Image (tube, rainbow, N blue to C red; front, side):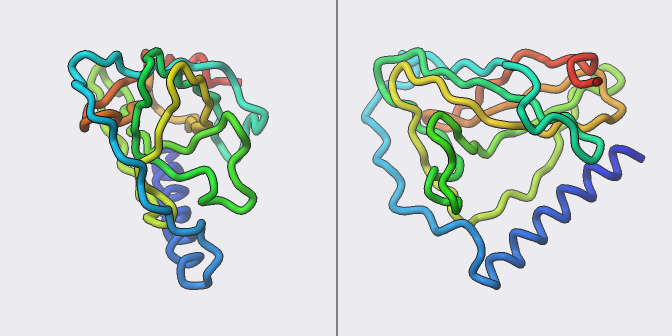
Length: 172
């Protein structure tokens, strides 16, 4: 039942995004994406993703909002796909990002990908500055899973995953 609620919420958010596009209330269209640096991605360390704790949003509608931290350990910018800071009104606070993350839940001993319907308005290539640390929020469902992990595509189409987050971290 909770898995159904999670899927229903994601469907609602997708439809809301489509509706706001039609009404002109959607996030602004992304500007031209930044140029990807001419870098040998095999020599660049991936960003580091770590659970920081429960976000200020706490618990809502069967979800605990968790705050994840992303750090670029390199001396070169790291591009990733997400929403630009000014895609929102008001803009995202400084130090906050909105990446198009992937999520996998561990259920019955197997990792299962969860599908999200990300809105196309305002998304594009975004860069994480050298040595920068930022945060983003993830609404973790109170569902029938053992652990979950968050993945972010970066660089030249590579994906980095957080360490698995056990269900006990989400229960309040």
